[in-house]
Length: 146
Image (tube, rainbow, N blue to C red; front, side, top):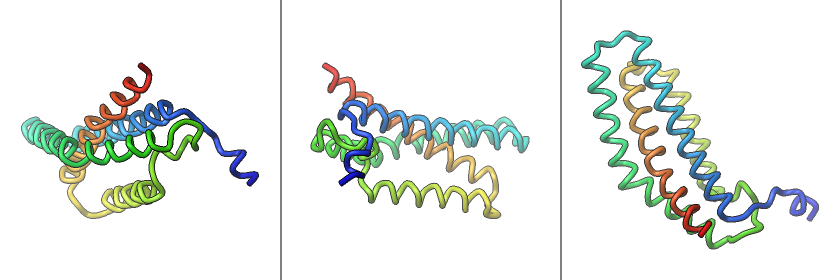
């Protein structure tokens, strides 16, 4: 029971803010990393524009259709658990394992022989989806503060 006393506890709105910040930050990092690769590899402006534009549209659609639902599940989890729970419990163990899997897949993708234009486009789409869907957490946090 000593571990139970040592775990960092927080309010539900803190967990909502932390989850949203995590999704937004990771999304922006992926987006910026992809832009750096595109510009460093001297692709033509039209190629870069098509990559960014197409991936952003795909990311917005993925965010709306898939990640918004995932965010709602996490928001419900946080609300159900209430205040005084572990700070990092805003995602389930299954979700944390999925995050580790996605990090591993990202590293493998970067080490693969896949063309950097493809990797960059995928990173932009995922980054856009995460950043876009982070708004669900921020909205829930704002509602919890009123």
